[in-house]
Length: 333
View 1 (tube, one colour):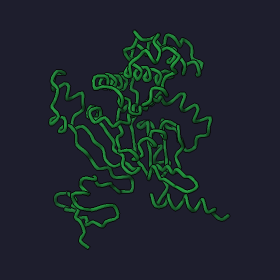
View 2: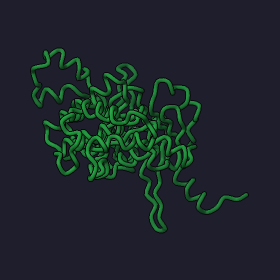
View 3: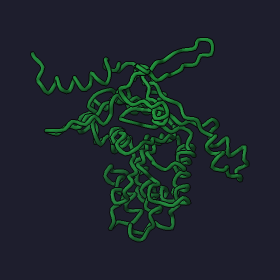
View 4: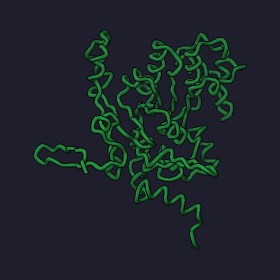
């Protein structure tokens, strides 16, 4: 049977991203260690006239019980990735394993059960998190009602207390501040005991004090309950308090910003009372360029600007075997 024109068009796009399909067995073998495993993940949005490749062969591993953040400019693909992880959109190609499940093989029923039982989502827009005419405790009870859980009121009150809102149980959306609404949204996301919590710009519309409160809640959930948490954020201050930050550029994992010491270690050394200056805070992290599984990497944009090169240009690469260092030179051809 000959391939249709649409199939050929799709394959040509995928072939430019990688020359081989991912091996599903290589992804499945570490399910006990990893909550999320993305390999060569592709998402293509098509209309009659336009084809946009939002994810271009992205690789990402997130261990169980890890708290990490994803950063990237508008159009980088981070929101598309979050939708993939949340079961809100389907990948076009590649491999996406979450909690040992292959999401590319999901049908509609599988996706419904996954969103109900496995993943919790905290939206940036509180109007998507909360039903405005319900009280805080009623909002938290709603996901449990849809699942048919018993003792809903008791569990809802426990969750509101956990996020510091036991005094707001009967308040409606218009009676709470933005930060309080966001904390109710976290309680809602936890209602059905998810294994994975996704947060889309959870501190995007709150002040610094409230931002710190929200991050402390995430840290407490991660440390004491072992919940895997992925945060998408533009908040640089927030990302500096997280041990691992993955940067996405042009639909691929570009770099990782990791702490030289964990945030907990720094607090111990400072006695929990001394705050580091901005200059000191910068020294706590280092940025590492990430090689994908085919050995490719993305050069940081500021390096490219300093070298005067752009995408498509040719460069010379040399390896110094004695020092184990690699050198990159601009080609003058």
